[in-house]
Amino acid sequence: MTISLHEIQYSLPLRSATGPEWTAMVLGDFNHFLADHASCERKAHAAAMMLVNRFPEYPALQDIMIGLAREELEHFQQVVSLLRERNIPLGADEVDSYVKRLLTHVRHPREEHILDRLMVVAMVEARSCERFCMIADALPAGPLKTFYTEFARAEGTHFPLVLRAAKKLFLEDTVNERLEEWLAIESDVAQEIPYRATVH
Image 1 (cartoon, rainbow, N blue to C red):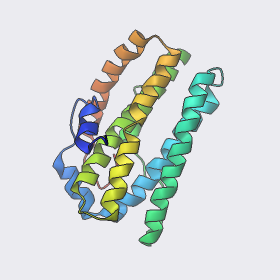
Image 2 (cartoon, one colour):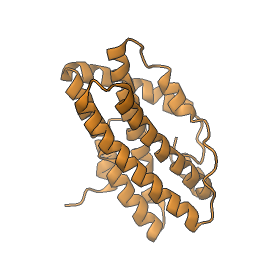
Image 3 (cartoon, helix red, strand yellow):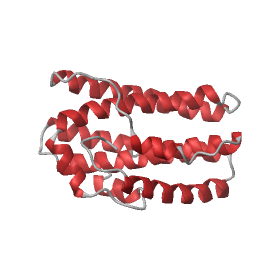
C-alpha cells in the first residue's frame, strides 16, 4: 500500500507547521524554488559526505551516510534535469539562513558534536520533507506533481534513516533526549525565518 503525502507529513515530529503562505510564495516563483531545490540537494550530498570524512572511526555511520549521499546526488541530478528542461541556470548557492542558525546550536566536544551534526541533518530532512509534501499536494495534475509526489515519498525515509545512524553510535535514550531538544530548537528557528520561494 502506497503511503499518502498526508501520512508522511503526519509521521514527521516537527513541532510547528509551515504556513500556506510559503506554498503560495513558491508557486508564485517556481523557477527560483527549483534552482534553490537543486542547491539544497547538492548541499545535502556534501553534508552526508562530510560526516563520512570527518568521523572515520564509525564504520556504521559511514555506511549509512554513503548511502544517503548517493541518493542525494541522484536527487540533485533529477532536479538539475528539471532546470534544464525549463532553461533555468543552476546559479550560485544562496546563504541558507535556516541551516546556518541550526548550526549555531551544535556543541563542540567530539561525541556531542557528532550527535548534534546528525541532528541538524535530521531536522533539515524533516522540514524539507514536510515542504515537498506541501508542494506536491498544491501542484496541478501533471508530470511536475508526479515528480514531487515521488520525491516527497523518497525524502520521507531520510529522517528515520539519520536517527537510525545516531542510535548506532549512542544510547537510544541519549538520542531521544537530544532529539526532543532539537525539535524545540528547529521549531523556533523555522518560525524566525521569513518565508521565501526556497526550500527553507
